[in-house]
Image 1 (cartoon, each protein chain N blue to C red):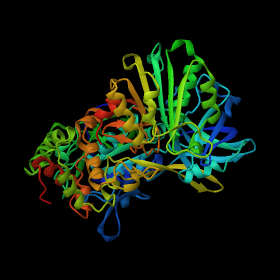
Image 2: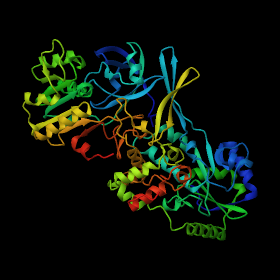
Image 3: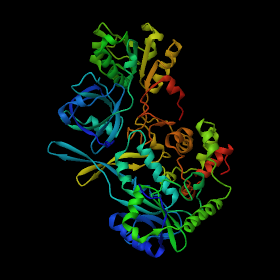
Image 4: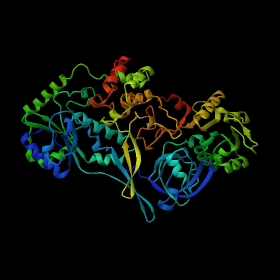
Length: 350
Length: 273
């Protein structure tokens, strides 16, 4: 078993630690990109890690569920077609994740374990270890506190860092996390009681910093689950949606996909690719019939999958980690907090 | 842990034209040379792929009691089915499955069985019909009501005659519009109800066909005293994975690919988008 004892690492030693992690795994971390965006990508030097700043534009789901995810290789052999499974078990460290994004990966893993286990997803995810940094203040659009997904995590993490000024407190939350720290034990020392106490003070302060305007999932869940949201309200919500699918693609918990054969080097690779329940073609049948022809049906579908009690019972959580990305990217106003508020009030003030 | 997306390679052993736009394919799984290690229930489906073109769900049109091949009947309606229709004996396709729940054959034991098919809705019933006929003693009276737009659109024409010749099956066929030489019934499927004696209390009704036909048939059955639990149908939705992951086929929190495609009318009635 891993030891839960907190450790500390001086900030001057972080480059050394990240460098060592890079020797054993692909390390993905927040980096600064053009136009001031922060994006999570594979780094080639510890210097590329962007500390602080905005939440990365895209969640880390690309590391467990790539936008184009090869599943099966299809080629021709002397005896006919040859089909082989494709797996990606590259060791990866996701460094500097936000708490909400750790919860997002946990959610994705749970849905891919549910019922029929999805080996392609699970093998890739098993090789991923996260090092998250607890948030000491709310971010611009975040409401993780309503989703049990931050600002600090009590569980679900591999390694959780807390910024204590000139050093980080490191907590190990899983065996994978323990294995990650083990070879670099010399860079850490055992955390002192006052350091652990400071971490808890920071957590309490971070929680208090969230305003009273939170996301009221409970009442929205009650109404969505029993179909007590009027068609008129869904229409009004749909009127603010451009059907671009951005909310799906930036969502840490969205995982709907389509399967396509892509030609590559004289063979085909059958891939799953991200899809969006907001696209009309998502449910369009070959006959031309579409059970979700009306835009309101597609918007309703998104929020039923996200917040209904039926899915909550299945997945053990709402399909939202409060990262706020949909708030940021939505060109209209049909983001999670706005829709939850509208459902709760029974009217739209978008 | 198996790869959910890995198809088996199957060889097309034979192709038969059913109608101008519908063909039946006999498939033999290449591994092992015969499909004996591949078990399925009537009402389940497979994800069938034309390599390089894509994959889509198709019902098993054959019975698991017939192990020489698995069969599926495909109407041309899109890119994949167009590609299917260019294939011939000897060509290879991918088969993944079986997927879905299937008909509960054990629950049908000793019951009278009423099969009602419309157009391309007969193939999923055919698997169950042959299963029942191959184990004929286990079941009560077997009645088949089948309708299509025109006589040309009737599938399994030889088998319709074969079933009519058997003494242990009652079968009535109708078409919406007759053609030259057609001497049979004309009218929608519900016109056939008056041709047969129904015993709602001891009968299970299996209904497959276009949505409009299902609607009228189910109304008729309920009016004639069938319980919503005794009316059984299969649902179709746009599907990608067939294994409960891609979320294309959801109706509420139900997955047509995992919870279905076979549902009782009571279950269907309670589903909401």
